[in-house]
Each structure stands twice: as structure tokens, then as C-alpha cells.
Image (tube, rainbow, N blue to C red; front, side):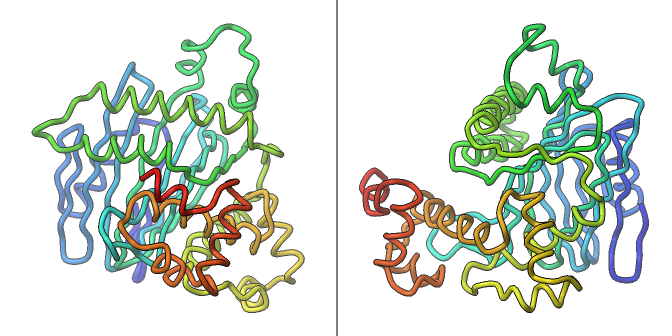
Length: 325
């Protein structure tokens, strides 16, 4: 761990996973009891739970708000092959208007050979769930020769990363996990069972949606494109400007789109527009906002435009989803 003038950097790996929590608690004046981390100092609030199963599986739930950016630097190791599923779940939409410009919604799956860096912005609530398990443990739950794409990816020990958008089904599993951290009603089996549900849903997504496996991604490209996604493509009230983004990242628009697509399967604006229509689905599902309010908040020109885009993507108009709700 390293404290810089403007950032707090956490260097982590899969070796002795819980040791990292112990070190963070000591450095930042918090507590770690082997399962729960609590920090409340002058510049950050952190609450984290890490539940261990079967020796080689960890389900981690993180919630933080910091006055300075926190950077998690993941260092590869070759001692044991691990798979990491990191699901960003920032922003709650249970009540009208309870939203935020920043979100890290999305599912990142990578292995212990992939260098990975994730920066969480300051003065924003950040929430995520991470499921970490060894390849040996995963294989013990499957037949000797399973025929599905995710297993093929997991068996590849070269560096790789797979990204999926966060759909409502998996988000509901994540919310159940997060709701279960309350010590007064915590049931450890829920962390395990909902993690299994998440993995089952991801296996289906991999079969139905995946186009190209992302292997040997340059760490600096990965860092830059994740930052672009989290920082500039999460405010749905303003369309991103590709010219400004190309200047920001010091590359042509075509190169920016090419590198972004190599990680997220789509060029920048196509990805942004898909995330935006998925946000319509999420806000209809989790809020009591009217369709007109949602269209206005997400910067659609009018409700008819939002309905047209939504129907093209989902096959039915948003009013049908609202009626089901």
C-alpha cells in the first residue's frame, strides 16, 4: 500500500488475500476481524466484508467513499491460477431521484495472470462485489470435459479479460448479496448461493453474447479504457465528444475506437448508447419515475425517441415494462 499526495494506492494479489485487509486496516486506522473491514478516518470511509468458502473462494462486498482517489493495482502471480469476477454496482435507484452521475456498473472477469488497475473516484459512493476462486475449485464443480465457452476461457492461463454489461438479473443477485452483510441477519450460505447464481448467469451470457475473447491486453490500454468507460461514459445527461476524448487520450478517434472495441466489443458511442438504453430499463425497474422524467434525465430528445430506441434494443416498448412492474 502506498499513500501519494493525491491518491491512495493499494497493491494486491491473490497470495494471502485476507492479509491485504489486515494491512489496509493498520495503515488507515481501521479494524479487521477476519471477515469485516471498517475504516472511518479524516479522508475515507470504507466498509468491506470478505467471506471465505472451501479454502479457495472469496466473496467480497465493498462500499467506499473517499476524499481522494483510491487506486487498486492488481499484481499477477503464478503460484496458483485464480479467476476474478468484479461486478460494479454503484448507484441505488429504489427512490425517485436517487441516482448519481458516476457509475462503475459492469462485469469484469479476468484471471490472475492479467495486470489490472482500477481507480475509484473521490467524493462518490462506490460499491462492488468480487467473487474470487481458484481454477481447481471451479473445475471440481464441473464434469471433466464441460463444453462451454467460459470453461475454455478459464483454462487459458495467459492474461485475459472479459467484460459484460450488468443486466437486471445479475444486479438483483448482487443486491441480495449486499443486503445480506448486516450482521444481525447475515446468512453465509446466501453469499455462496447467490455467487453460484451469478456464475450460472455469466455462463449463459458467455454462450449468448460473447464475440471475441480478449487475451494479452496491454495493461496501459486496459487502464486507459476502463478509466474512459468509468469517467466519461457514465454520465448519461451529456453525449460524449469523441474529438475531446481523442485529445484527452492523445490518439486519433479511429485508434481510440479500435482500442476501446478490443476490450468492450463496441466503439465508444455504440457502447455508450447501449449502456444508456440499459439504464432506461434499470430506472423503470428500480424507480417510480415517470417515463417522461427518465427520458429527460437521460437526455433523450423526447419520450418518443426513448421509446423507439428502447423497443429496437429490447423488442418491446418501455411502457410494457412499466405495466409489468
